[in-house]
Amino acid sequence: MVGKVIQPLTRAPLLHVSVQESLRSYIADNGLEAGTMLPAEGELAAQLGVSRNSLREGIKALESLGVLETRRGIGIFVKAFSFAPLLDNLAYGLGDALRHMEEVLEIRRTLEVGLIGKTLDMIGPEDLAELRATADRMRAHAERGEPFAEDDQLFHRLLFRCQGNETFVRLIDVFWLAFYKASRFFDLDDVDPMATWRDHEAIVDALESKNLKEVRMRLDRHYEGISQVIANNKKK
Image 1: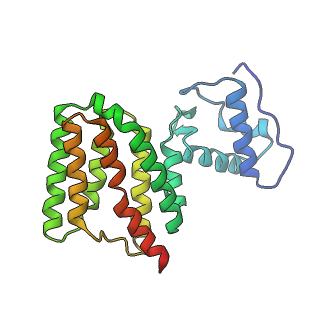
Image 2 (image 1 turned 60 degrees about the vertical axis):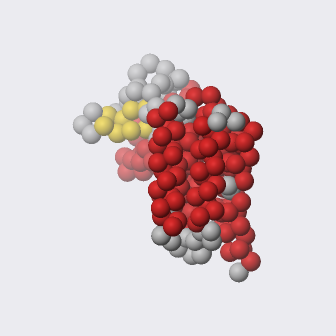
């Protein structure tokens, strides 16, 4: 392969990390695009001056980050960039800390309120119908005293589906992953399920009436419930 060669490693500590850094530099220095096959494993190990086992550890780490992919029997390829692995790692790195969930919630709240205007311009009858049906299910659960976190999560995915922003939708999912993890250690039950349902129904009403000011206000206000639940747990 023509281009800049991989520089041999000059330090031994955390060898697999050094392998990752060198491979990243090789990809960037040569402007390798998604789908480009890297040199064979033996050649890479020789250029780096490391064993194949150390090379494989570095490659495996880059695969988990979405930088590389190994196609069995074919070779190692540069992978198309995606935020998905980063967001997945973020979710699982949050641990059970209530503070982390609160921080992700604040980011999500700010982004949703900021992006809802675009939804108002783009949303169609099908998405509105699904939002209404989801809100109706939330009401039915609330009336029976049942939790409805899954429908709540779905509601917000539907709210922004029309924008086609998969990275943002995954960020919404990161919050819910953090929520489910934190719920194993804290009491995150909805203190007023009927109020939560009414908040979501009001969001759909505002969308249907094409009232941007109202929908922003309703969307922002509906976060007060979960914020209060978090605050109550912080006092314990």
